[in-house]
Length: 146
Image 1 (cartoon, helix red, strand yellow):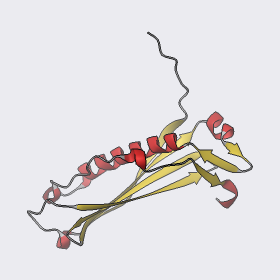
Image 2: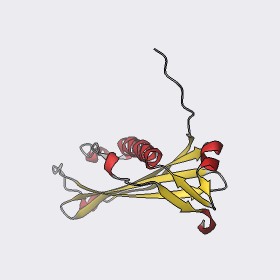
Image 3: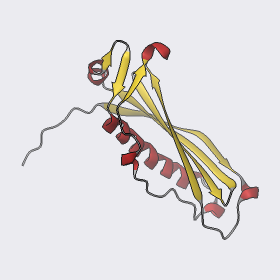
Image 4: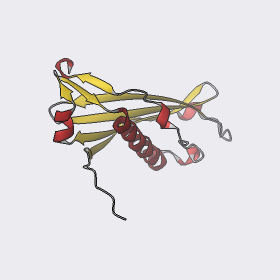
């Protein structure tokens, strides 16, 4: 059975660690219960025809902030995809593609956290997340406001 190939609509061009901070004085040894706040942001570069998807995680023990990490994955959109979704200087990116970018960025953040966290934070892990519910609609970017 053969499958029809779809054109890839993007390429990963960069990974960045925007923030990484550990607050040792707030860390409670022996307490493996962490609350996690997640925030996301999307940044567009029309010059590069690229999208940056950023995830920021703040880890708390009780109410004390113990670690912050923010990572970004930067994706260059295929020229055809960019042009097909650009109308009146507004670029609309389909929610499924953005969800895929979020999926890749979350996984990347998990790896950066694993590589950078101090030994005493060994039980701190970024759990699996159901990201399919994060984006409900396509997102449009007004390029004249960039």
